[in-house]
Image 1: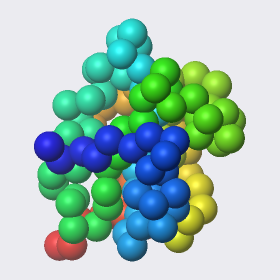
Image 2: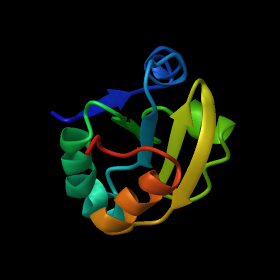
Image 3: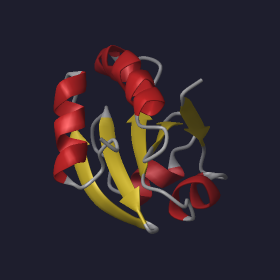
Length: 111
C-alpha cells in the first residue's frame, strides 16, 4: 500500500513529527469524490515515496483531527511540513492537478 492510514491517535506521530512532508487526505467511505481521487493518491504515494508521505484519515473514524484543522468538506487535502499545515486544497482534482499543487509548494520528485 502506497498510502498510510492515520487516525486521531497516530496523527501527531505519523504527520506532525514526520521527517518529510505529509499529504493528508481527509475522506469518508460514503464520499464519491474521495473514491475518485484515491487511485491518483495511491500513484503519487508510490511515485513520490522518497519526498512525500501520502496519508489518509477517515473523518468518520477519527473526527477530532479534521475538526481541529477546520475541515468543512471532503475530500480535503492538506500538506504538512515540519509539524505545520503548509497548504490545503478542497475537492476532487485529477492527478496532474495534485502534482502541480505539490510542485507549487516545493514537493517534487528528484529529476
